[in-house]
Length: 558
Image 1 (cartoon, rainbow, N blue to C red):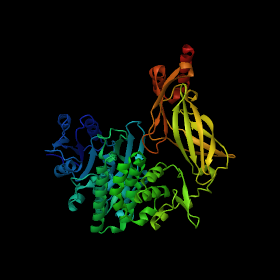
Image 2 (cartoon, rainbow, N blue to C red):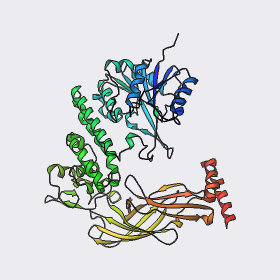
Image 3 (spheres, one colour):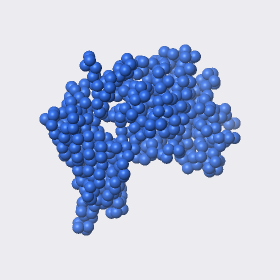
Image 4 (tube, rainbow, N blue to C red):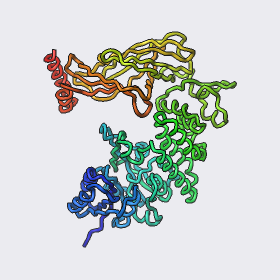
């Protein structure tokens, strides 16, 4: 007699023969063994079918399902697997991710402690380029609790992943809830519907999903979520938001609309906002044409919950002041000042060199409460921009830097500034002079000698971004240093420590986020072949041995 599985886990795959075995292996390692594994193949054209059949032959818990044609998304392979799933509980896994070993056990235990429609847990995010691990939306999964409907905790709209949850099959069937086919961002619609239809769901802090993030994957091979450079991506995201809005209205959940709007502004739009500085004028114009009609429909209360810096970017987009929106976007999350401000007759201060024309714009661009002229000096807002980069002799770089001080915090006359750079534990300090150009604007030239960077004896491999420090008496202000978004990459080989630890140093523009000046150290020669491998093998406890080895190499080189 065939045993009925407790849980069916569907693994969706398309042309991912290399990573599919890792995903399936994570299921075969589950501490709760009575599971069914359905590999749902969206008509792959690579070696995926052979790999899937081999995996199915190795474990009788595995079923291989192949769609007759490619659907172009995640919904159809999930839905076809749902049709044949035998278990009373269901989970979903993407072929490039994994489940932690206790994921099924933990979520199933939460179902058995109280009858709920689904359970959900923490998602581990792993950067494939650095190996760094973090938790997705950690504040939402910090404590074990049962939520009696989304109205009780609408902030959970932010956790829109379908893969972090275990659903009761009866709940999905009772509500005829399936993944919407033929659209992108299906998880957002499916999860919003699940939240609204569920009478109760349980949240646990245990890790239940391992999500691998490849932020610098080639644009055309990146996941749909990471293809923000495509205007079709913008249209798809707006389309699914409208579908969610319609569902909230027709299902009687209009009361959570503001929370859902806030989630869109804070999460979805915020991702595009960070990309704005790197887009051309044609793209920006098309982007504004797509998003502005939808932005006009969102709740004023959702805008009011955002930090002022994000509201400024949104309003500049809505006002089609797109070049200024790019400037504002470069400071998001870093407290960067505007280049200039304007003031009305009542003494209120606004972003930019001209007064806003509408009541809405005045409300959103009002910086008066930001205290540009009054906040404590360590947190004062300046804007430091590199306007010119020139290669000097050897491994030196000359930077022309312009500082904007719209709050007039700096006294009249020359200022002493310092570039700070720390490739390792010790900081390199490069002082230079900023001379006044006009009120609130200073300019100076810094000579950066990279041979003086205090690299540790065991070398350094990584990226650093210089910051600029100003002083006012005993007080210091350390702020971001923005670079031109494009300039020729500069490279130099530097034989640190008398040749014991050679490195190649690259000076380049940061191609994402705020667009800072980026310096990258790559070990070469004896550093790459001997010192760094020794350091990695020895680990932190062997630091003294590494230093002795580096010193020995240095003595030989001399």
